[in-house]
Image (cartoon, rainbow, N blue to C red):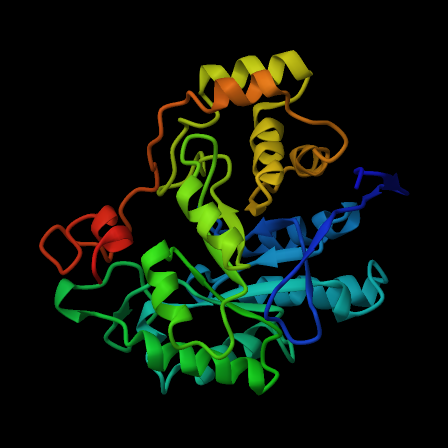
Length: 329
C-alpha cells in the first residue's frame, strides 16, 4: 500500500493480529509515547498533530506516565471530528513488573483504562518477563524486590483480560524464543504480539523467524535507536552504511530504518514530536530497498544498544540484559 496523502492524511498499512477478538488489525506504524523528557502538554499536542496527518496507533504503558494525556488527546480528537469514533484508534498499553502477579493483572488494566478514559484496549502487553514486589510504579527497583514471574498464572490473567473484553488482544514485550515457547506450552489464547528492540544494528533474525513460524507479530521499539533518550544511543542514526543507503535513495536515515523494518514484516513504534519528522516517518511505503542495500545492511555488526534498565542490577538475579533475555529464567 502506498503512502497516499488525502487532504494531509497519510494511509498506513495494517496487519491482522492472530489471536485477537473480532479479527483486530494493527496499523504498521505506531507513535511511541515513552517520552524523555516527559512534558504532558507537548505530548498531548503531538498526539493531536499526529492524528491530523494519519497516525492511528498509539503505544503507551502504565510506567510511562503518558496514559492520561493520550486519553485526553484521543477524546479531543473525536470531539474535534478528526476521527469519527474510538474504533479508528489502536491503543496499546503494558503491564509493569510490580503488577505482574495473577491477582493484579486485571486491576492494573482496569486502572489503565480509567486513566486513558477508554472502555477497552486494542492490545495489552506484559512489559518485561519478570515480576517485582507489588508497589509503586518505578523503573529503579531494589534487587531484593525482584522476583521470577509465574508465567502460567500471569498469562492466564492476561487471557482473562481479553475474555472480559478489557482488551481486544494480548501479547508480550522483551520475550525471547525460549520464553515464548514457555507461554505457548500452556496458552489457550496465544500472544498476538512480541514487542522487542529491533533495528538494522540489532536485527533479531532468529526471533523474527520464530515469531513468523508461530504467527506472532513482531513490533520493533527503538527502530531508530532511541537517540536522545537515557536508554538509547546515536549509533543507528550515525551509522555510515545507513547514511550511504539513505543518500542513494534520497531518503533520511530514519526512513531507511523504518522501511527496513517494514520489509522484514514487522510493525514498529517510533517517537517524534516534530511535525515534519512525523510526516517523513509515514513516507516509507512507496519505495523499496535494493538487493545491494540488503547486502550492505547484512554486514552491519550486530549489537543491542538498549541500556540496562534500572531494575537489572549487577548483584541481582539478572546480572546482565543478556541473562534476562536468553537465560533459563
